[in-house]
Length: 245
Image 1 (tube, one colour):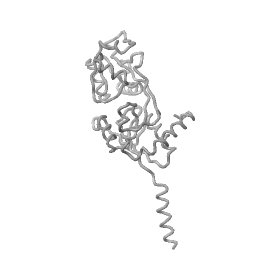
Image 2 (cartoon, rainbow, N blue to C red):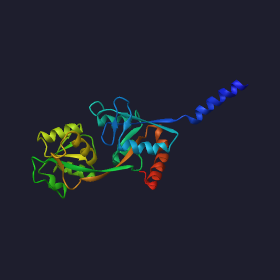
Image 3 (cartoon, helix red, strand yellow):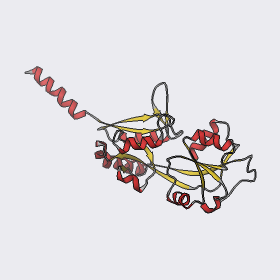
Image 4 (cartoon, rainbow, N blue to C red):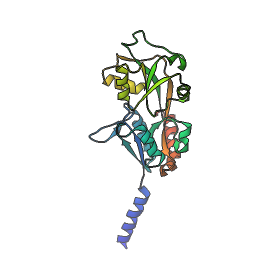
């Protein structure tokens, strides 16, 4: 009898304490998202914030699937989540059409989107007020990224000359080779990357940001993980109230 009670207790304990696993996909996006290639441990601004959020949801085990964009293009990541083969995406801007296959968390992170130019090419700097002021220039952006409704509309109307490249590294090389007049980068990412490449003085931001980004975590509507979204949003609200997020 004692033997069966022990077995029952072990099975019951496993059921009680078993965690749901949520796999969030992304590519490295320093300083927001990084991965130690030796240990496989994820780190960065966004990762630290998500770890705080999920620390308040003990029934969920969080897993990050991080691969470089050369092996894991952004558009493919989106498809994997759309069809439920991955549960969600670490950080994503809200877009109406994405609501067809994704559920978005409350915002948990923000940043500025800036245009950058080569100092040697424009020693007196550049300024702009409206997007139409940018029409004389060619601008490099990341393919598949969403830069806001105004930018998308300006592209459709044809007064922005936009070149789309696959990665941040290719974007910077494009600028340095004088194949674009400007490139679009997140401010934190640009500071990190340009410093790493020794280009902090050679590549400068325009004074006015294109927009202030707010990012969400997203979950596929085809994933069982969506049942945890209310808990995720509650954790985000609590951390914002406490000043930890």
